[in-house]
Image 1 (cartoon, rainbow, N blue to C red):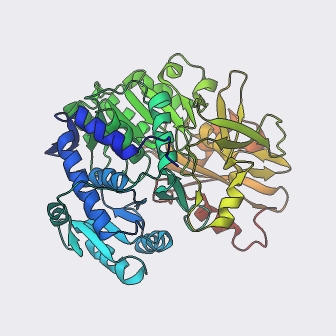
Image 2: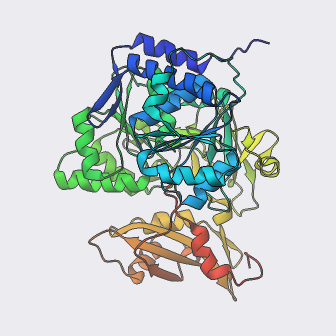
Image 3: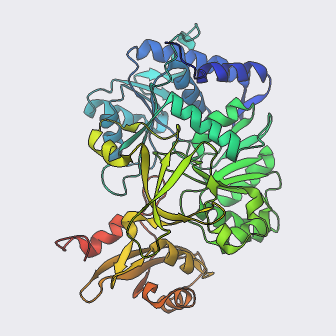
Length: 513
C-alpha cells in the first residue's frame, strides 16, 4: 500500500534544491550552503546504508557542530533511527542508552572517541564508530569521500525515526520512540503554531544542545530555507555577541537562560536586536521574569509546552499574549496546538478543575523502546499521560500546576511545589529553587525548599519564607529553607528532585505519609 505521508527526505531535498545557494549551516568560521549540505548528507546517508544495511539505530555523541546537523539530515535520508546522546551524560549513562537502543553505529568527534570505543567493548550491538577528526573505527571525512551515489531506500513513515531517552529523573532513562510520521507531524506543528513566520534567510541560533530541545528545530528551519547556526555552548555574553554578528532571528532557551540573558542585556544596556522569535520551555517561569525579559528584548517570546514523549508544541503561548498580559496569562502555557487534543483527568484534587494533562496527537511517541510495560502505563484510551497536573481556564489557556509525582500532601491539603517555587522566584536574589515534601510525624509531609542565590547576591532562609508568606496560604510556606550552592541536575538541565528526596525518604518504609 502506498503511503499518503510525504517523504521527509524528499521534502528536504526539494528545499535544498530550491535554496541551493543560500547558507544552510554556520559553525564558527565555517559555513555551508544548502547545495553542499545536500551533497554531504547524501554521501553520509549512502555510507550509512552501506555500513548499517539492517537499519539498526545510530547514536550521535557530539557537541553542537556542523557535522551533527549533517548526520541528522543523513539519518532521515537513510531511514535509520537516530539516538541522540547528551554530552553531559556519564559513561555509565551513555552505555545504558547505547545498550538499550541496540545502536549498531555511533557518530562522534575526536574528544569523545575514547569514550565511544570503550562503548564498543561493552555494548553488544555496537561495532562501528565514525569520528569527526579521526580516531574511531572510521574517519568521518573518509566515509563521506568513499560514498559516490545518492542514497536509495524505501519510504516507510511508520519506521522509528528518533529514540530520545528521557532525563531519568524517576529511574533509568527510557527511549521515547518517534516514527517518521510523528516527526513530520511535530515539525508541522512547529511551523503552523510556533514558528509561524520563519522565512528563507532567517537564522536559528542553537545555544542549547542539539541532542535535545533546540535540536528539534533543525528540520523545520532546513525545510524553510533558513540557517541553522550552532554555538558550542551557552554563555550569555557570547550568545548576545553571536546573535548580533550572525543576524540570528530565532533561538530556543530554557527559563534559567532567559534570566541570564536578561541580566546580561541590562548590564550592556542593549539587547540582541536581530532576534524576533525566542521559543522557551522545559520548566516553569515566573511571570515577573518573563515580563522583565519582554521589557528588555521586546515582544519576541513564544512559550511552548511538551515532553520527550509528546514533543512541543503541545501548547503555545504566542508573542501577542506576552504583551500587556496579566500575570495569570503569563503563568499559563498557552492554548493547544491546532492538531493536538488535550483532556484533563481528575486526580482527586480539592480543586475540581485540576487534573492530569493527557494528550492525543500524531506527533506523540508510539511508545518506549523495548519497554512494553512502561508503554502500556503511559497511555490510556489513546491519550498519552504527561504526568503533569493542570487546568484550562474559560478562554482555553492551559496552566500547568505541577508534576503529579511532585505534589506534596501536608495535613490532607495538596501543595504544588511549582507554585511555591514561582513565589520564591519573585525574590530578586534567587536564581532557582526546588521545593519538595519530606516526612513529618504530625502533618504526614512538610514543605521544604532548597534555594540557589544569584552570583553576587545573598539570600537568607527568612527572606525566602517571607516572600512565600506574602503570596501564598500559610500551609504552602516552606517549613525549612536551605541555601545551597547548586542543585543536582540531569543531562537536560532539569533539577533532580529525586536526589533531594532520597536524603529524607530513603529510610522510610514508604514514599508518602
